[in-house]
Amino acid sequence: MSATVERLRAPVADGDRAALLALETAVEARPLGWAALGAEAGWDDGCLLVLRGADGGLGGFASARLLAGTAHVLRCTVAPEHRRRGHGRALLAGLLAWADAAGADAVTLEVRTGNAAARALYAGAGFAEVGRRRRYYADGEDAVLMTRPAG
Ligand SMILES: CC(C)(COP(=O)(O)OP(=O)(O)OC[C@H]1O[C@@H](n2cnc3c(N)ncnc32)[C@H](O)[C@@H]1OP(=O)(O)O)[C@@H](O)C(=O)NCCC(=O)NCCS
Image (cartoon, rainbow, N blue to C red):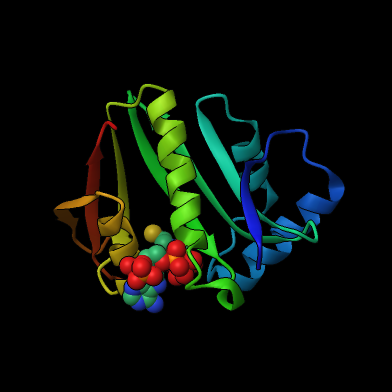
């Protein structure tokens, strides 16, 4: 997939809304739906990025929000058929650029301890493991807390 990363801002076109919802439903165990995605597109203190293919379709999305001066990565997801081609890295780079431009003092996130792919992605982007959150997820899995200093 030849693709670019772009910020999706409200109001979101009907086609993008449908594509984003379909993508979220396909890749997330617990899709949050438009109430969450639509809100993310409307944030002034956060950003929702999408991966757009040459055909206009969406192949991934990522979001982050500023809380008390620190940017929190909330999502970073690539459709299974488009993985391992640098798209996750591109989405994350877009979030980090946004966080740096917004003046974030650091960027933080939680990731499942068993999510080796995401942990490697984040480590490669300069995130360090700084702690654990016991039984952070609904199924009882711990989260690794990772932080990247301001860029
Ligand atoms: C994590 C995720 C976003 C990575 O997306 P991707 O487009 O496949 O990642 P990239 O191709 O940009 O890979 C960047 C780096 O991440 C790491 N990585 C990605 N997939 C990996 C895998 N399956 N195993 C090990 N490392 C992996 C590697 O370090 C890779 O660099 P390399 O290709 O030079 O080795 C993707 O696997 C995904 O959507 N997973 C499900 C959602 C998820 O868990 N998101 C994170 C929630 S916190």
